Structures are given as C-alpha cells and as structure tokens.
Amino acid sequence: MKLLHRPDLYAWSRFDEARNIDFHSVLWVREGGNVVIDPLPLSAHEQARLASLGGVRHLLITNSDHVRAARAVADATGARLYGPVAERDRFPIPCDAWLADGDEPVPGLTVHALSGSKTPGELAFVLERSTLITGDLIRAHAGGRLTLLPDAKLTDRAAALQSVKRLAALPEIDAVLVGDGWPVFRQGKAILTELVQELERAESE
Image 1 (cartoon, helix red, strand yellow):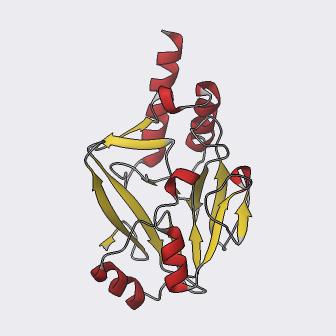
Image 2: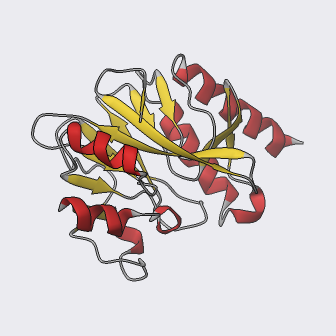
C-alpha cells in the first residue's frame, strides 16, 4: 500500500491495460474504525498491511461498476458496506446502509451524489473538507489534469457538467483522489475549475 498526501491515507492500485491507467482504492486510517473506498482485490502483502493498520470497519462503494472486491473484503474483515441509495434496487451486492447527498457515514467524510454518470446517483466523498475522492465520473488520464467520463458512457452530459461544477465550487479542495487514473495532490480546486472551463468551452463549440 502506498502512502498518499496525508499520513492517514493510503492507496493500492491495479493497472488496467485496456484503458492504460491505474485503478485505485483508498484507505483512511482513523480512530473509531478505518474506512476503505472502492476496494480492489488485495494481494497477500496488501492484506497483511491492511491488518497492521487496523483492518476495515466501513467500506464505501461509489457506484455499481466499482463494487470490485468489496464483498470479499467485507467478508474477510467484517466491514459494514455502504452503497449509493439511487442504485439500491439494482445494486449487485447487498449493503448494510445506503448513502445519499449530504450524508456523513463517519465524522469528517461527506457524501456528494452526482448526476449524469453511467450509473444513477454515483457518489463522491469529501474528506475533512480538503480531499475529494471520486469514482468514475471524474478521472485523470494524464498527470496534473482531470477529465470526464467519455460522452458515450454518460447518461446526461449537462447533468454531469453541473455535478462537476458543484464539486469545483467547494472552497477548500486541495487533493483529488480519482478511482481511475492519476491522483492530484495539490491545487485540486484550480484543476477542477480548469476541467469545468474545458467542458464549458466544448459545450459552446
């Protein structure tokens, strides 16, 4: 597991050859029980590291395409599973709780429900006001630059743009940890704003 921009945040990754990017999972080590977001399968080394850091109490899934190894990790650790409430009737695995916009599953972690992505009500999370953690809608295929899920996979591009605008308007975002691609560790709000401007230019052309 790789240490991220904070001493309590870690990630593990897998390279996806078809998309030529890394997929990531995030671990937040905290008093009161660790949080994992969108867990990929764990190697033996990663399992041991996770155990040494205190295991998992809360397992959050951003969308049904990011279930990944959630069931296996929950079964191995006893973690409580959380999914997006907008997918409750079609989610591929049972969850213990369902998250909606504005929820706070643990103190310091706020839920933002997004519109227009490939699944309804995709979730993003803001950790202690400054770290944005995304699933599919916002990604990064090149270092230092964010992008949007391809148009062919969006259900509503205008709604997706509004979701990105809402995240870009958050005043204190410094880091953006994407589920797919390169993370942004500094100046996240500025890079989100650049993404909004790029999308708006494309809309006007």
